[in-house]
Image (cartoon, rainbow over all chains, first blue to last red; front, side, top):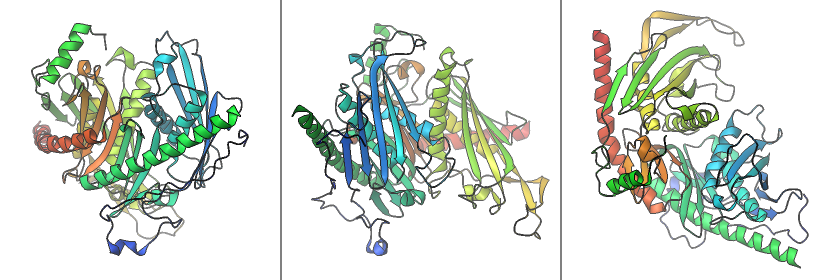
Length: 256
Length: 287
């Protein structure tokens, strides 16, 4: 990993502190623990680094537990010749998996839908008017898939965009929540995603307190959605602080 | 969509703000819905749904297949949507492809539920014939004939109607066979099985224009939207899927408000659709 000197960040653990909410899971559900021994409302430790790829305009590497992704941003550069004139910029996203990313072989069309979801999550936050006639390419590579891949990808991509100096309204943070039985668990790992009853993925702009993308599958009751949304918003704002710290560190390191 | 002038844009936005839309509807009123079933002879089930100027056809085809090794106890369902350029010139080439895959993904999310199968509109286990060996593969194809906004809701309704119309032949499996052998099956051409579609959710898209949101937006209104949230709700009032379109951000409280409005709207829409579908089925049997 070609990290900038001094840019190595220590591992953070976004603890959801000060939580005086009613417990959403009954005592009867507590006889099992999560595969990695975390609490239900505890995120995996996040390691974020900018400047992972030296040839790109901006790049970032993120490691959330076993999920490891690398995102590089190229541009703004000239749009393809076939494209017509546009007075706002274009965004092109591409997600790919390494062949050794997951244990199952021959994954389906997941990557194409991930690409479009990444695009949807990012397009609202980038100030496209700042680079007319040109395209920004976001290439994301999942080195190891360990659950909540998409949310890690989105957070990492926004960090890479910030590193590339693309104008944005705010950083984008994404967090997923899984619902198994009556319990909600934040930042699920692959095993949990495999047996979940419902999944909830939210991307938001933490400083503006706006949701840019939200997808829900499975069966959810309204109180569960409320609870999941609160959990995500809380985790998103904490992740946002970590990302901001990471960016500050990398700029102060390059200033020296 | 042909560009619309600034004056028209203000007219649309102003109308929505005053709860009187350009075609005289209120913000939460639907255009007339027309349902017809059994429109395609070669499919196991089919339906055509018209909502105002939007016209879509959904067909369900069933084929004998093999369950995937990851889920040996379940059948398979695939959703494909085709936005043909005949409906609108912009659907030609990549524009249509992108929209098609977006719609198919959203429908899949709404119909198939979570990984464990909770909240699924189609019970995948009911498609199983012999565990790990034989199952039904359902191919759900949607075709957009004419597009005047609100495609996702129309497709959702058409798929619900098509599934109600679907009859799958009963299959008998010969009981005696070795474990590694492909079992012999006998497809009956007299006995048919029907789906229980009461759990299939309906999709309501709330389109946000200005500070208000509307149901069943026309293409003109959709061109003025800042974002749209599609929510699928099943009969018991649980949320089975949610997708957001459009780049601009929404306040969390607005989304929660939208969800409660969608639940309220679905109750009447679900009843209306159910009666329309059964009326269409009755009409088909008569003819």
